[in-house]
Amino acid sequence: MTAQIAIKFLETLKIPEGPLAGKPIRLGEFQKRFIRGAYGDGVSIAALSVGRGAGKTMLGAGLGLAALLGKTDRQKRREVIIGAKTRDQGRIAWSFIEGLAQSLPIKDRKLLTFVRSPRLEVRYEGDGGGHVLRVLASDAKNALGLAPVFALLDERGFWDKDKGDALEAAIFSALGKRSGRAMVISTSAPDDAHSFSKLLDEPGEGVFVQEHRAPEGCAPDDIDALKIANPGAASGIGSSLDWLQGEARRAIARGGSTLSNFRLFNLNQRVSGENRDVLLSTDEWLRCEVDELPPREGPVVIGIDLGGSASMTAAAFYWYQTNRLECLGWFPSQPSLLDRGQRDGVGSRYTEMSSRGELSTLGAMTVPVAPWLSETMRHVEGEQVAALVMDRYKQAELGQAIDAAGIRAPLIWRGFGFKDGNADCDGFRRACFDGLVKSKQSLLLRSAFADAVCLRDPANNIKLAKARSLGRIDPASATVLAVAQGARMLATPVKKARAPVWL
Image (tube, rainbow, N blue to C red):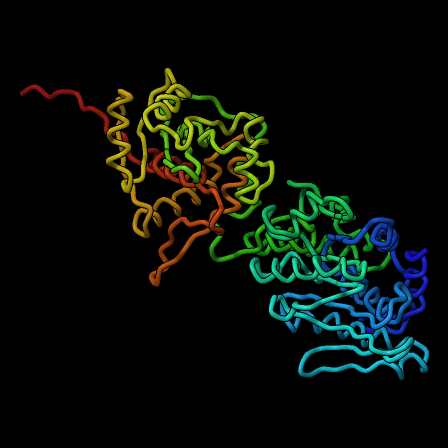
C-alpha cells in the first residue's frame, strides 16, 4: 500500500533542524491519517489545514522526496513540483528536502544534485535518471508544460489571488498527464472566499480534505480549541500547549491585530490578519454580539445604504438609548441568491442568511427604492424614528423615493469620503469599544465586517472601503451610519425649558 510505504520511508529519516534535530522522525497520528487519505484510491488532490508550526512543510517536503526517489511512484523520468507564493517561501521546502536527504544512505545521496540557480531544483540520477524536483513561485508563466507525478502547494492560503489561482490551475490540470497527486497544505486562508477555503468547503470528486480548525467564537486560550488546531502539540510536534496558552494570553492582553493573527495562525481560524486597515477585528465585533437583545425603547436611528443591481441594499436600526442594533439586507431576485453567492465567491452564504431572516429579495433586476423604503419603515412600525441617515451621493434618487413612500422623518445626509467617513467610522468604533452596540449573532454583519477595510489619506483620516472587489459591505456601511449618528444624538445635551419669569 502506497500510504504505508510513504509512512515507513518518512520514519527512516531524521529531523533536519530545530530542537529535535538529528532525531528520527516520528509521525503524529494526524499526519498518518492525512497520508492514508492522500494516497487513497481515486484521490488526486489532498488538502491539509492545520495551525502554524505543525510540521506541514516538512511533511510535504518528505513526501516530495519520496516521489522523487521512486518510493511512492515508479514512473520513468519523474517530475515533482513544489509550488509556493514566492521563491523564498519555496526555498523553505527545498531546504527541508536538502536536510532530509542527509538521512539517506550514501549511495542515494551521491545520486542527488541540489541546484540553487537559475532556479531551485533537485535532480536524481538513480532508477534510470532524468528525475527532477522544481520549485515554482506563483507565476503561471513558469507552469507551462508541466507533467508532475507529485506536486506540493505550500501555504496555499496565502498565495496571491490571480497568480496563485493560475499556478494552482496549471498544476491541477497537469496531474492527469501522469496520474499525479497534489498535496495542498496551509494554515487557514483569511476568509471563506479564498480558493483554499473553497477547496476545503467544497472538495468535489477525487479530493481528500483534513482540516483542524478551532470553533468560531472560542476563547483564544481555550485548551480544547488549541488542541483541535494544533493536533501534534500534545505529542511534541510543533509548539507546546503551555507555550500556546501563554501566547494566547499575551494576544488577549494586546488585542487588535495581535489577537487576530493568533486566531489566524495558531487557532487556524479564517480571520483577517490585517492591522492598519481593518474597521473592526473579529474579536472586537464578537464582543458586540449578545444572546439576548436589549428592548426596543426610545428613538431609533435608521442607516440605509442603497445598492444597485449587483451590490446589496441594507438598512441598520439602532436604538441608541438601549444600544440595540438590528440589520437587514436585500438583493434583487435575479439572479437567485445561490447563483449570486457563487458569482460573489461566497458559496451558499446568501441562502443561509436568507434562512436566518437576515437577507431578503425584492424586485427583479434592481431593488425598487420606494417599495424598499416602505418595507424598511414597516420593520419599525410604531417606533419613534429619530433620523434617516443616508449617503448624499444618492440624495436625488432617495429624496424622490422618500416623497413617493410618504415617509415623514428627519433626514440626515452624510458623505462617504474622508471628512464624514472619518467621523462616522471613528464614532462607530468608539461605540463598539465602549460596549454601546448590542446585536444578536448576525451572519450578515459578520460577512460585511470581514470585507470592510479603511483607507487612509496622508492626514490619517479614514473612510470605509471594500477589502475585495466582490465584497458586500453595504450592511457595514448602514451600521456605521446608524451607530455614529445615534452616538452623536446621545452625546447632545438635552435643552431644558426654563420656567417663565414674570416682570
